[in-house]
Image (cartoon, rainbow, N blue to C red; front, side):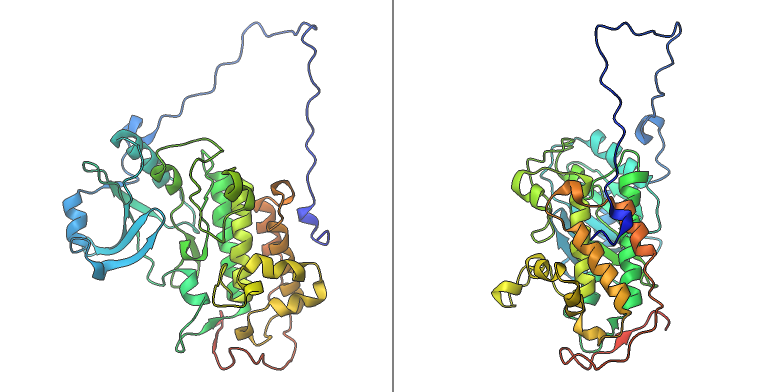
Length: 365
């Protein structure tokens, strides 16, 4: 995929090795050590995250009743709740399998609450009563990306091409913030369509960021003893040995982008055996650009700029390289997606026979 210049590998200028036998001049007054940045708890700063009691959140969710349950994942269950002032929130009750104490949990949560980006779901507060570990987020009424992309209902409108690229670009920008702007940087670990929520304007917002450390007891190693990703989205090196890096997230993003392009699940056991794994099905097509058009979601009815589709498929293919070192940085992915021209004239062509009759939700409506 050398046609994408921003993905060409970057050379690093490594400094020459120093000869230990050669004396090195040192300044008379050594520079001061870097300043210590106190955590929010050390500073007594709790303004970024509210503290809730378990009683308050139990009341907000009707004692965590099943009727309020809106999601369940690897880190716990999510309930829709209404606070005393009328604010609707999403209440995530973490599985209590970690080993973090109360103080460590508060430090991690307050650090997460300082993260601020338009493509991240805002963390409002937390509860650490006793052994409870609960997070409170802003509520996203449009639900997750998977609800609007896979197995859409008859009365739902399918996303048009422009909306799909808009969502992919926004999700990549949220991931770029976590990788390159957050301090310390955050490896997502579990990027998937069910963790990408949508606001009323279909802007994507990443959820569950930073939860792997909270749920796993604070492990900071790059070799994870417990693979926390979702089957079908995990990078091969992470699945094999627990080896984790920012490039693991890039691989997962490639699968999300492929789902946006194709309208297929990452793993779908209802399809023929050679099509059940999305990446395995796509790999032969990646090697033949003339077949890229076959990957387009049939509900699009060929209403997309073909060059834009080809570029998007090329980006996905680069993200899904087997070897982590040859995958692009997420900042390169962002740059590539933002240069896609979704306003090119759409060629006149026959509708695809598959999934015919579904309306397409246009971003201009």
